[in-house]
Image 1 (cartoon, rainbow, N blue to C red):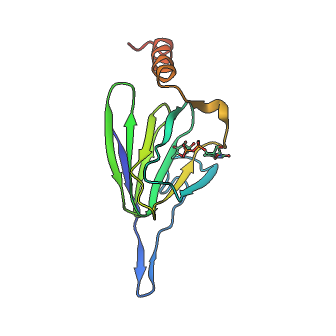
Image 2 (cartoon, rainbow, N blue to C red; image 1 turned 180 degrees about the vertical axis):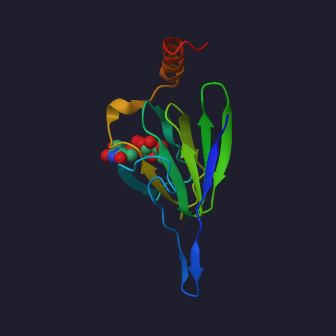
Length: 140
Ligand code: T46
């Protein structure tokens, strides 16, 4: 599985740091939505779904957490703990986010506005969706 991490250059001076993100220059899609997650309890597992169309850039701007990515064939777990690093999540990727530190803040940039129809919330439906779309595209 190819996971793309982006490094965002911080503009630091004696006052502190600033990271600027521009559509297409830093983010590989048109940004239609921004949301952030904070105050998550450490025992909680967020996500546990995939998206049919939405692409996202996830940045842990404070604290840390782990993310499991699953493309239906392989799984990979990554630590998010660097405000200068963005994790790009393409469409049709199962994700679970967990082990949040109490101070964790996740900033998420998304390629589509919110729509519940875009969610695949059941893991077997996710596998079926991949299978059906591969067949449609002439894959395995
Ligand atoms: C993802 C992870 C990192 C909205 O009204 N608008 C929104 O844009 C979003 C994302 C959510 N909501 C509502 C829907 C639910 O009532 O906020 C509530 C919590 O959403 P959800 O259960 O989807 O939250 P997470 O943390 O499980 O997942 C979210 C994103 O949905 C998901 O795409 O990658 O954050």
